[in-house]
Length: 117
Image 1 (cartoon, rainbow, N blue to C red):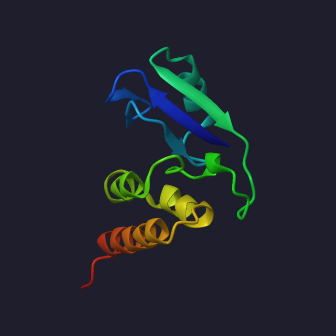
Image 2 (image 1 turned 30 degrees about the horizontal axis):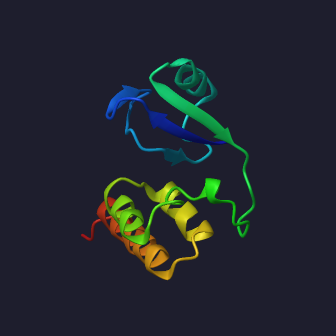
Image 3 (image 1 turned 90 degrees about the horizontal axis):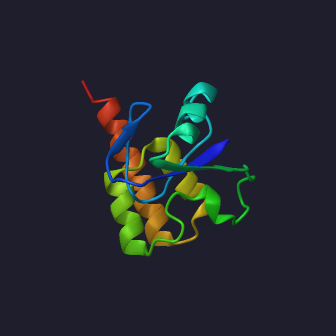
């Protein structure tokens, strides 16, 4: 299940991840069930489970940059989203500049993980 996490203190760490004070959407499979229990029990974090929707459904809870203007969305894409979150942007965001930035970032990350040679 997708979960949204907001830290009450920017940079607070739990389950091996630094959590910002802005809401981040983590796709299904990011955390184990035990880690989700730990995250929910942590008073420094606000953790919400989000029911999954099929691609094509415009539910903004599936889009990690929903609610951000295009400039902030592109900044998040280029600085802190990983490939699974970028795929969610491609599936759910309708803004051409945002989806173009997400695809470009996926290509860059894939190239970094598979350097030529």
